[in-house]
Each structure stands twice: as C-alpha cells, then as structure tokens.
Amino acid sequence: MSREVAIIGVGYTGFRALTPDVSYKELMYEAAVKAYDDAGVDPRSDIESFVTVAEDFTEGTSIFDEYVPDQLGAVLKPVHTIAGDGLHGFIAAYMQILTGALDIVAVEAHSKASNILTPQHIMAYAMDPVFNRPLGANPHFIAGLEMNLFLSETGTTREQCARVVAKNRRHALYNPCAAFGATIEPEDVLASDTVAWPLARLDISPHADGAIVVVLASKQRAEELCDLPVWVTGAGWCNDSFSLENRDWSSAVYAAKAGEMAYRMAGIRSPWQELDFAEVDDTFSYKELQHMEALRLCRPGEAGVLVEEGVTELGGDFPINTSGGSLGMGNLLDASGLARLLEVILQLRGEAGQRQIPDVTTGMAFGWRGLPTTSGAAVILSNGYEEV
Amino acid sequence: MSLLERAERNIDAVAWQGEIPIQNRYTVGLAGERFLRELKESGRLLGSRCPECDYVYVPPTLYCERCFEKLDDWIEVGPEGTVVSFTIVTQALDGTPLADPDILALIRLDWADSLLVHRLGKVSLDELEIGLWVKPVLKPKNRREGSILDIQYFAPAYHEE
Ligand SMILES: [Zn+2]
Image (tube, rainbow over all chains, first blue to last red; front, side, top):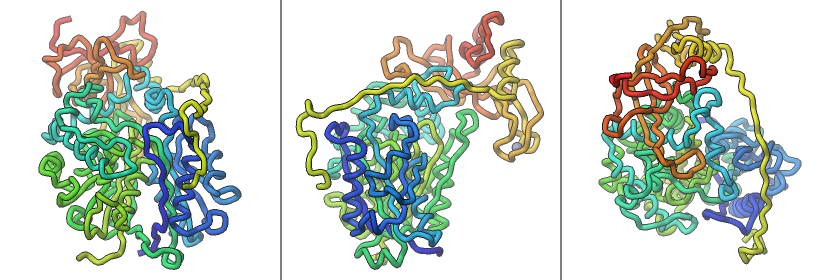
C-alpha cells in the first residue's frame, strides 16, 4: 500500500431544482466554508492545493477554470480545473497527496444547471460534428438506443427500470438535502411521456443545483486533525472509445474497468461480499442496473431481479443509492460523482440520519460523466472499523 | 450558515442573460474525406480494415484504436446492414414535441464491425425490431454534397423500390 490518504471534511449546499438566491460562486463558497469548518482547516494557511471540476459550456463562460480560486480561498495557491466527473477530480486530489509533496488538498464540483437555458443543445454539441451531429436528433436518443439494447440483451424489463426510479425517489424522502424525494409507483414511470423509447421522462434524472467540497489529507495530518477520518482504499477510472460507432454498446465496459482498477487497489476480490453498500450512477434508471452488472455487484442480467426483490433498497442486503441517487437528489452535472461520494462518506461516519445503514465499514461510489460520454470513475472508502 | 444574507423574495433575485454566436469549421480529415467523397460520387460506403485485429471501421479511420496500427486497407461495406438497436424519439433537439417520431438506429453494415448511427425511414412500428435488415436510401447524385446526410435514411431491405 502506498501513502495512506483520508477524507477529513465535507461540505455541501443544495440540492434544489432552482437556486435564484445565490450565484454559482456563492454556492461554492457556502460548500467550501462548511467543508473547511468540518475539517477544522483554514484554506488560506492549511490547504495546499485545490482541484475543481467544471465544463465551460455548462458554466456559460470561456476559460471557466480562471473563475474558481476566490470563492474557495484558493487565491495565490496551486489550483487546477479538470474536465470530467467529480470523482475524476477527487482522484486527482488524492494523487496529489500520494506524491508526498502535499498533505492537505480540497476538491470541488458544483451544478448551476438552472441557469443553463439550452442544455440539450450543449449535449448535442458534444457529439461528432461530421458524422453524428448533422442528424440533428435529440441527444437522449443515445440513452434510448443503449437502454433498448440493454433490455433486449439482459432480459431486464422496463418495469424493473421503473422500480429503480421508485426506489431512489423514495430513498430521497429520507435525505433532507435531496431535491426530488417522492413516493411513486413503477406504473407512474411507465405512464410518463416517452422521450426516446424505451426511455420515458421519469427514467431521466432531473437537474438540480448545488455544490460539494471534500477535503483530503495525508495519514499523519488526518490523524492529527480528525476524529473520524474516512480512508481512501481504492480508486480507478477508465474511458471507452467515445465514438458512437466504436464504443461497446453492450456493457458499460468503462465501469467494469474502472471498478476492477479500484478493486485491485483495495484488495477486493468479491465486491458483492466485501462492500457493504454502494452509490452507483443512475443518471438514467437503466444505468443503475447496467452499472451494477459492470461493477460485479451482481451477475450479468441479475440487477433487475435484485431491485425487484428489494435487495438494493434501504434495509435490503446490499443498499444502492441510499442518498436517492441522481434520480432522487437531482442530476448535478459534474458534481454528480461527488454526490455519490458524499453519501458514502456520511454513511461511513454514521451521519446519514434516517437512512443510516447499521454497521457499515466499506462502501463504493461510482460516477459516470453523462451523455454522450463513456467515462467513469470508482472510489472505495473505508472507516477502518473492523467488520462486526 | 456561511452566507449571512440571501435574496429573500423572488423579485429581488436578479439575473443577467447572455448569449454568444458560436460557429465552427470542422476539417473532416483524410479518412473522413475518402468516405464522404466515395458516398457522393459513387454512392458506395467505405470502411478501413485493420488486418491485425480483423476489425472494419465505418466511417473509416486512419488508425486502429484497438492496436494503434496505421490503416491502409480500404474496403467497400454494406450497403445492406442489420439493426443492432433502435429508439423512437418523440422530442426535437430542443425538447419540443415532434409531430412524427424520429427513429434512430445503430446499424451494423455487412462486412463492417463498427456501428453506423443513422435514421430509419419507410418503416412501420410493427416491423421495427432488433435484427431488422435495412438498406440505405441515398439522395439523387446531383443533390449529394459529401455529407452523412447524403444517406437520407435506412429502410427495410426487403421492401420493393
Ligand atoms: Zn488493430
């Protein structure tokens, strides 16, 4: 094992469909103040480096990375912004500490999705300009194609996907910061408008605003500063071919490889048995099931049956997305992966309130960068307690 | 609470609106140009084959993303192919409802390994299924301009002209 790294603080604000009362900078500032208070650090004197995750087009500002230092307490400090999911940023911060050159690093990601007036155009502009974009189709067609193939190849049903929505929306009822908690039936999902058949409106996670900041530290500093450090035991990430023509449509191979990299590092052979719970990207209902299978949280074709049997709900044998996931908390753009990580941190600290899973020691967060990407990242955390 | 004050009434929440015209030019590249010229001039579909991986790229690429070899084996593929997946899209790009649904498909052209993304046309919802055999319907030659849209759509291959 290389240098050990722990999470010593976390701060978040949101998550709401609209946040007209604050700017994106104020969202970030608020999450940062909470995270630094939680970690007991002063950003001006203690934090040595900052990583943020953002995308110019969704921010509506060119060279957006220049706009992040002031609201994080990062002026005149090492700062860099990367493109990807929030977990890619988290792993970048983790690796900075692994180098041995730095001891305390903060990572931030946020969403001010409510300020984006033409989100589908931005998504469409991410497609190949010569061979795909001229078709002028609504970009959700990519999810429709993938979902249809997933259902057809695995025997999973639309009803089973709808159960994922009902489960995660219900979990969100127990999460005070989730934007979209609701008691709905799978039938409501099936009856919602078709967007790209078989994908319906309620299969799609609605956008939300919010910001998340996580503070990481080396083992020595973590033990000095923190009573409840949460240890990073594994990390992995992977990109499949981005082209619609050559990517692997049959399985989320990017998730499988990111997972294997993280499992190898954490010394996990049988994730289903060795992890206590997971937060897994559910940008679309079927994605939770597809990602479960790719991450070996069940056998191929089994994920739909498990959600039907209640295995993945709160109180089940292997709870998934107790936070509510993106379906229940809201799609937070680049911050989505950090939202998955946030829940793993809260669960491992025993701070998940009504949705606390008893006696947990190890959990995984998996993030996907969303349409039209094939880019994912996995992080495994442990609170260091012995299994009971 | 880290912020002492917030806008407390909706009408006090001020927002500024911005927009910029963004226009780009995209060089299609050597392999892309070869594909689009062939489509325009002869109506044929061209792929590039990696002998190492025995994999045919359509649209063609100059290199193999699997083994990273340079490719120089150009072969004709299709024109018929098989629907690997399809979706019925009911919203336009901007989210507004479409009068007629837009059917998009992943098509594995005969002799190709990669999947072409295109539109299906002249197909009834009854016959729409994974495995459907389709063929491209091209624009007349004098209206083709060297674009992926020179293929108007793919239609069931067993239909009469
Ligand atoms: Zn090759």
